[in-house]
Length: 376
Ligand SMILES: [Zn+2]
Ligand SMILES: [Zn+2]
Image 1 (cartoon, rainbow, N blue to C red):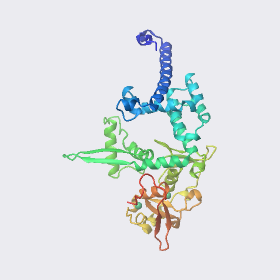
Image 2 (cartoon, rainbow, N blue to C red):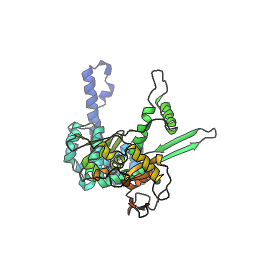
Image 3 (cartoon, protein in one colour):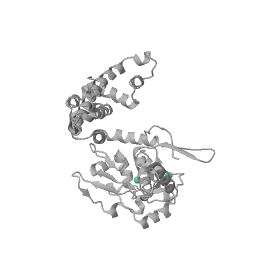
Image 4 (cartoon, rainbow, N blue to C red):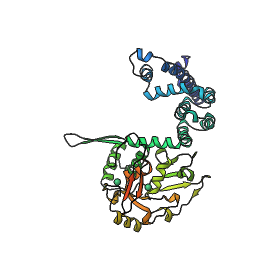
């Protein structure tokens, strides 16, 4: 590449010239990244990394290219998928989209295998920023393979963890990992409590979030009002339906929406296929306060065998979901704690009403990641 631009005296340039210089530089960077992606994919086929003592080609590329592991993997992914997205490559060479779009396209191609069709996505790539395009591709992945999308989300829930360690002086250190939806619930609960309390509030963001978490744990704050936007097709789990949108989260699977919509604590907006807000009557879906109290008295705690989470920590699960015509009458409701509610909707466990008023639980034939792990 021509080294001259580096020596240009930028202060001498007009605004337009400066902007043009920037854009030209970005185009050149993208072209170069495309070339490097081809090289990276070729390197990934060979054993150079092994000869040099690296575990994987990505490791070799990351180290020698001074890149993050993510950037190295993206580079290889683009190089490997180039032949499956010729129009996208052409659009990038023509400056219509950037290399960042190509990485999203390549990752989508990698995920979907034979189901990937570049023609469905290329126009969206031209119209959208890389970030927005990433979201569009997640919806596309859901539409192409809803089952797999839901499996991946369920797997992310299995990865949930929170590590709390205590120092000698009592200080507690906290680190953890949350799936997108669980993380969004957490963020939604913490965010309002972490806002500045006025102009005089000089706490930084991390301090405010720390205070907010303590306040939340102490019982402060109101019920998190999660906003979910879903088409009826998604809620019904129909093939080809997009994923649902949730504030502060990547798109979520239809099983997750079903669970969120099952319990009444979630604010939600449903859209029909023409994106008009449709009103699902409150009486049809929201368990009334008296019914909820009666349910608490009847069930006392989570109804899952051997689980004793108190009613206040439970969701009112509809045995027949209201989207399938189920009512909010007591005989269609069962108290389930949040973990067991998740296991019914996304973990593929089934619950059946037993003869003596108890419920029976049937494990899934296929489990996610942790076969044989029973209820708490
Ligand atoms: Zn439910
Ligand atoms: Zn339970």
